[in-house]
Image (cartoon, rainbow over all chains, first blue to last red; front, side, top):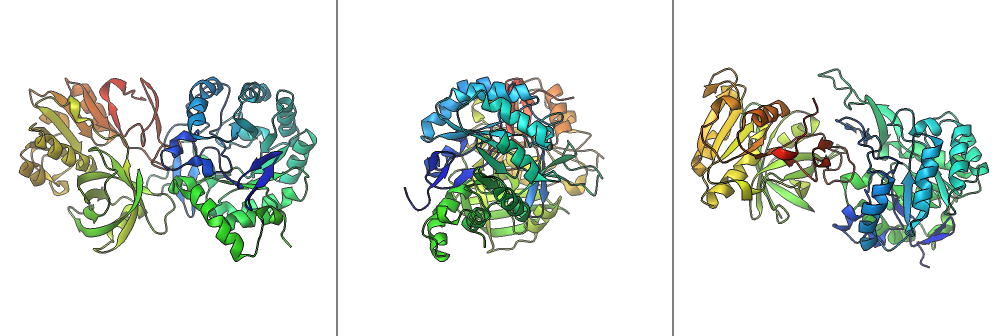
Length: 303
Length: 244
């Protein structure tokens, strides 16, 4: 075990850096550009029971230090993910992968998780109750403590793999929701998903994205993410995976000081396909700079 | 795909708001006409995708219209400045289907990627007919450049201030073996309906990453969902599914 290693829900990661779901496809797309085995792991594209095309285009809007996306959970459905995507991934990634799952009903989550539970390469199930881009689903489950907990309970019944629940920041009290998920058996909590946002084109006076609103991510949301990770990490005993605007090795350290055991990198992968790799390469010298021997020693270390 | 630093060699206005920039640097990942580069611009988060107009070993030409903050910043760059760009993105045009009399059709800032295609076809001893469509005379660019390559060039303007009055479909020749086109979606649709042959159509969509990761630019086709940035921007006529 090196100085970068952390333990996430019983599985050892070589380093805490995890490309976030929706910014890294099913992994093999990035393997054309670098050896993705340098990653701690990565969270694959949000997968649902049925295939989904997602929302109409345009789906993307530029923002100051970030972007709005309104993809709407485009994915080929769990059966095709298992038959087509995971075999391609297996050829280029030798570590356990984090399977990101979403749904439109509690049973959908359980159905998809039960299928992915049988996949050897799946290390963790990251259950997304926080997608702001689908109606009648996604975030609807994550903005209420009871429904979020009911998803956790349903998923825990069908899998022995660690279940990490991914929470939305678009709530009044994230701590209550996190605690309800922990009580329902969640093995970990990841946060934050995107902030609900909107841009308007001044010339056309129309929203920039076709779905009007979308999820705002990128460096601009980093302080919000650090704050929420800090609040949740102080309220629960299970490990927290921090994300939201992480773009550098220093951001990783800050997120871990706030209480994160591991850190997901999202939007940064979209502007620089090598972003996650560069962050990992920068970690040792950044630890040296701040006098840190082992990265796991700083988890929750904010004074 | 390769992330490279390119040095600005020149940057000049061709019309009121269309600029031509020449860049010097590693272009080795650009392998087909119709591909694009994705340019990092200081102060903006997302890169800006711009199609390649021409490419020769280590020199690259792009032509872009100033439509927003990104292209405005590009228009102010001067010789010697550096830009960071992901190169070799998208599938590009496949020249294998051209036949001996291909028809190339460009509308507005859809014209540039056809230049590299025309030049490479002529290198293969294929002589294309080129239709360039614009709104009016003072928006026309690159007519002479296509003529210099040895193409038969037909210009259309919507207001009739030069060439054939009307749209690109009003200037179709009788005889052609294949169609290659790039331009705004209404133009692509009109060409699709008018063309007697098969063809390749280059589409535009707002992109997030430009290399297939984010699904920001997805579209439905007869052969399934495709990403304009990675599986496109060029789609074959047989697979196009018009949304409305």
